[in-house]
Length: 151
Image (cartoon, rainbow, N blue to C red; front, side):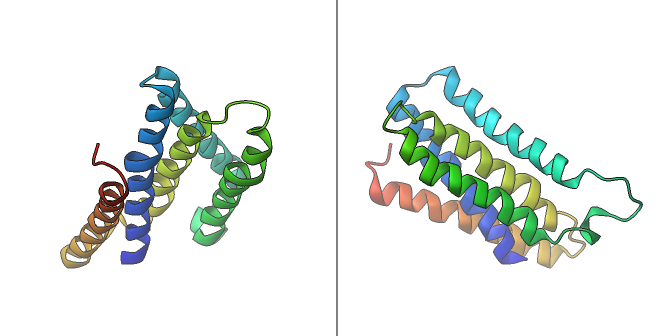
């Protein structure tokens, strides 16, 4: 579980310290950037709701393993951030996809990864999870400072 929370921290760090700032750098601080973040977040919320839609008395955790819930959105993201975006970039400006993908990252981190460990009963394990989360954030912040001018 500490690695799951580390992944959540790195996804949030990637979205907040890299993708959204890159979109702001390229497009200016426009409202449309944040609308696309919300669209990316909302689309993954809708997709997950659709993938979970069924009437049953068993909890969802007994139906689909967490890996499916992570791999499907990740595969969709990679297909959109890779082949489709590359092909589309020849026809129009695809910079908005940075914001859209940031919304995807935020959703995966918050809804899928953090939700797996937020019910921890042990204070010690909860502390380990929080430190793992912070490490993920700090790693991505460090990368930001290492490869950018610090702004």
